[in-house]
Length: 204
Image (cartoon, rainbow, N blue to C red; front, side, top):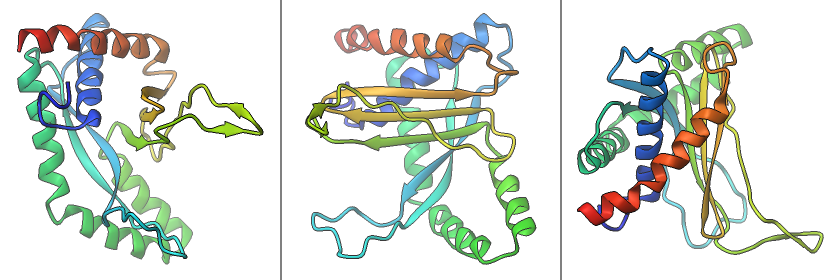
């Protein structure tokens, strides 16, 4: 599906997440928005083939708009890809990185206030992590799968962790129990929406 649309696995997975959240909100009669904002960590430096002897993270946070309510597959994937590209190639990642460096040296109460201010501009966080492409072992035992959850800040209520491992993709979901009491329902919807992609591809 990603190759057919000249995009990434992350974009395709986000399309499944978008359709699942749309269905969830429609089912519970609470969809009053056409999009949501998510906080997404990204590297501001390309990953080199040879890692330096002293590793150092150069990560920043960007705000990504995830559209909801788009039925057409091509339109949805294009909208997500455009949203991600617009921010990725703007000044926002570098401005946010500089802000994070400044926050790191400020007193605790000030730092917490700034973090909450930024975090509360979104409903939650999204990470997409490419893991090992082949089976890894721990103490000789093969790892069958890996599932991750994202840390959340401020009043964020929704976390999505997309993780690829050994040819498979998993999605870990964390939610505020008061707003989304059954994250398993959302997870099932994401799986169902992802399963329809083969049909979309045939139609295209």
